[in-house]
Image 1 (cartoon, rainbow, N blue to C red):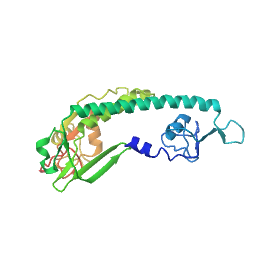
Image 2 (cartoon, rainbow, N blue to C red):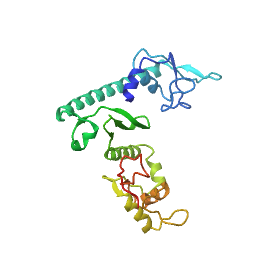
Image 3 (cartoon, rainbow, N blue to C red):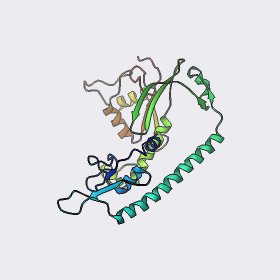
Image 4 (tube, helix red, strand yellow):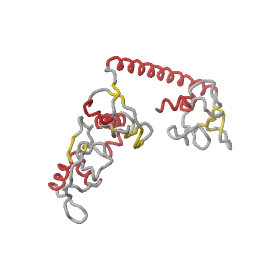
Amino acid sequence: MSLEVTRKTAGMVLAELYVSDQEGNNATGDGTKEKLFKTGLKALMTVRKEPFPTIYVDSQKENERWDIISKSQMKNIRKMWHREQMKSESREKKEAEDNLRREKNLEEPQCVKIHALEKDIEARVKVFGWVHRLRRQGKNLMFLVLRDGTGYLQCDLLNKLEDLVCDMVDRVLKSLAASTVYDLNPNFKLPKRPFKMMNYSDAIGWLKEHNVKKEDGTFYEFGEDIPEAPERLMTDTINEPILLCRIPVEIKSTCSHVLRIPAY
């Protein structure tokens, strides 16, 4: 989705872009004076094609805020941009080839109504419907519920969640921020797959066994919501990611992993 948006806005570029190594930010900047880029490469990557607009950088002269980027700087940045373009084109080509190869190996999807999906679990299907509920998380992740007049459908993303968490941890530990992680938690360990699955009823039992009580001094009982603090305590004590499952739908009606269990 982000790639599609970038392509559609490729022609909508400013006549001039502003870059500041000291005040800019590549993550939040857009090249205006109010939101500066940090690097010239980010400016060119945003434009995506030549001819490039005029790029202003921090001036080295007194009493002058901006100066046009030097020819030597622009030459070096353009070389870097060409390399990134080649990498990007190579990635897009490989992704297209992978998609084509996957399509050949996958079975032809069957059009199915939502109410009849139960028999097609683990099969490849095509479903048409309206978005009944949509929740966005960050720029590239969303959760949605579909409806087609016969029922509702929500994706099971537990496996994808493992991939997301493990990939994020792996990226952080390979970055310059890795030392900070171990400074804050010297005993930090990479999360193991598959993540631990714990039933809601077992979590209630764990809290009682470890004498974790509510503010009024009583234990958590089945049918009561478990707040963040005791959940975090349990996760930190067990020292591995936990996916809490089979939560009574009455208290977690928006969760994707709940089963309707009567509270008692």
